[in-house]
Image (spheres, rainbow, N blue to C red):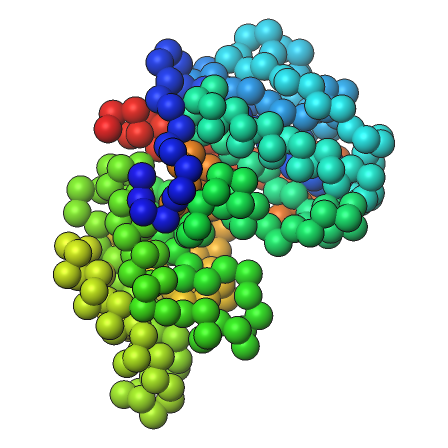
Length: 340
């Protein structure tokens, strides 16, 4: 476990890899994508079992909308449903604050099970933050909630594509107004973030010697101080400190030129300074097949790289590619974790 987590790592399980899936916002595409992704579970993941957390009737209805024979999936695939009742019936595309606490109940059940060693990993379908906030629960996002519930002081959001050499982009800050980013960047925080990335790439992704490329904050990486001093006063000292700890982190590089194949070909991850500096590039390159991974937790968590797609809910037109990739990654991370 990295130094940022105050809770103990989840116990290791024996037997088949067991993955909990939270089906997310009931008015969104999460339930039907779950059904579609699991239709061929035994062929895709022969060593895994899946526990779907959600309302049974909702899952059956949305599976039908996605042209999935849900009864056949439950009968012939390594899939079971743990029923959690909706607070009120859910209509596709129609948000209802009454179900905000239902969404949190799914997430809490998955987290508690993972911490207890019941699940090797959790995979989260998209939720709607506004629904939870409208239910009277202050909520910033999955990443922050997972950190709070697992008593982890610092976590790192990383989005990734799939493939033989996937593009991975981690964030030094997450859901902050742009005006607050500079003040949130510290030498200590960046060193800790780099340590988390290095640790998890080694232990959960099987990268033997991770190489991390780091962006600057300002245009042209500060232009030697003429366009800002964060690169000189904060980022460069953090890179020096990380290097002294044996972490191969390089930069700071101008973000507008870093995302080119000639720079990325030998990189295992890019650390961007803020949300919209790194993620537009990642999503442009991988949307529909990208995933979200929370690094630094005592448990394994992956998710899709898209939102609730309320306009597609119940239509059967939503693409399950990102959820399938998230399940792939969760199973792979669980395998690496067991091998440690």
